[in-house]
Image (cartoon, rainbow, N blue to C red; front, top):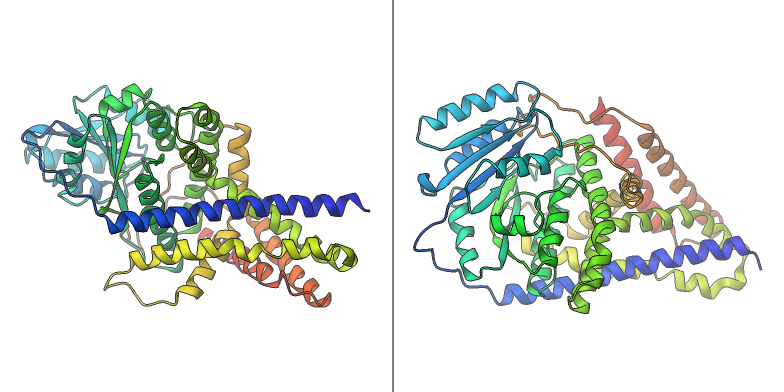
Length: 483
């Protein structure tokens, strides 16, 4: 019996099992989230004495959006004598002058705003946040990235929740989207992010499992940051890293899906890829640091399992890429070894792995619909989202593997345009060999489709069609936006 075909089939099966496990966890989170929505949490009363709050705005070369976030922070509805705004500006371009002018304007209006400059970008965003803490007296620390526009009542809606328990370390809110309907790319991103914020975060929180501060749109208790060891640049996702360190020390997080902090989605493929690289590599780095600690902790078994799939979320792309690459040879192996029909029939359950995900995304889709939401066909849009997600598998799997191997990478922020078509374009880099490989993979899966038709076996045809479309779409947008 040939060994290589058996190894390929076995590896394919292991990847399939991992994806099924991931899908089942998403299904359970959906059930937990729906249960939470059926039992809304009452709003806590406003405190008799509001605490000192610091709002940190980390910036790096964000001339298109810097003024907007400063203006939004300046009109937050909070006692002026208890509010300190820090613009943590590591910029090296004319953003510095724009920031200085807006700060000068709002200072004359009675706002306490500091323009914090460092001699180097050491530690990137984590370093800037840590540096800012030494220069402020805030008991609570709100963080907003440059592309956010928090509503004026943001602090009034979040700060009261800390009074419910002295062990609440973070209050996280849901991200909204300023430009969700600008393009196909932004619509797909909004679709995926809504699932995370409307289902995953709600489900984990209601189930008593570990959740994460999302890097922005939330408030920290300062003593929680200090107790957990402070901001560190050990990973590209300093937010996820600190979240796990804090919760492993017994701090609790509160998530508020009804409080929305709108933000701008990446409008071009290279910006999206830079964001995806940072999120996926950082998640793998955080898993490498904390997965063992989670299993050695006193957390419940269910919480340990959920934390495992949470930290290994990005590793799904490695499984998808391996399955995709193996699926074409399997067409020929199946045709040449009819005696293994039973094994291939078991492998054919792959589409069933997506049924829990269909339920998960459909629930998020329904929860995210408003009267202003454009009418779209969910099945078609879900398949398109699934296809493009698969098309990012090569890029994201590379990020995950680099994270697991412990290879260091610079923090590349996601450039935004401020929703202005004529805005100055910040680039994260030109075309690279990975874009060529994405194009070649699109051709590879078209070949897989042709092989299936030739072998009179259409079992993998839908999978190959999604892959070919996804890699082709990602390659097309990468080239188009690079021009």
